[in-house]
Image (tube, rainbow, N blue to C red):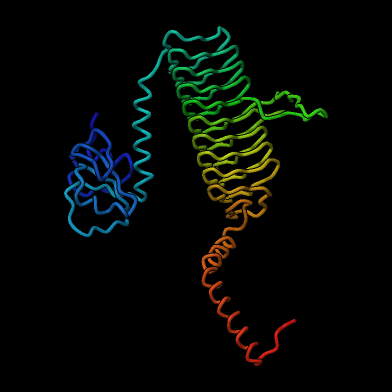
Length: 353
């Protein structure tokens, strides 16, 4: 399937510079692209490749000022990265729409409801009372427990497991190996040092337009719901504890963990390997740097924290600046000590008792 530069420009509302009939049939990185491929330039660090790339068409920002002539056809847009992502998304949708039907062997309980245009791959298992919306893609090894709901246009990649009573919204993507609705970590300590399991009878609700990476674990609530709000993006290898709430359009990077009953606001950014204790709140717009340990509630919106225990980012920068000066300060202190000792020896000053 090929497209001309003029067709692509129309799709992304771009301004064309060059040959409108230049055609592309695949995508490539600007530094490696060959004729017949479409590339993009968003990071100024890669601008040099624009003048040597083999790509037939390149999407660039409106603000780019050329340092020399280019041979490739340019499409100028407000945001090259966003425009390229939109094209990739449309391409992916065209490819996935070709997948429909039910492969065998797969199991679909007689009480399950399956929408139109659904793809059920071999070895998928759909349990009693499951409701699957329209245009859903269930890849091999997907398990849907009793009474699970999966909304329209959702994609569950190979090996995704969704336990009973969980609700997955529309336009959700869950990548391979993720488990949604496993038991929360609830154990009551006993006098003899043993633990008694606390039954986890809640569920998980994943709202619309959420994307969850590979091998993540989102625990069901003890009671009520663990909730991932609309537009949230969770990276690979993330742990979300029972009764946690993740706000709208919040993004969490890989290997982060959120302990039970913590409430994270909207538009929060959490870096990789960050750890957040339970039963606290993170205000809207907050930023948690990678490997930070958040142990207290963040009350003020748009706060930036770093370190373990996490503290104000600006204060942390001041502390780092001071620590870099410690060797020089130590040297100066030693020189001052020698000067004081000399003055005391010459009886020009009186030593402090």
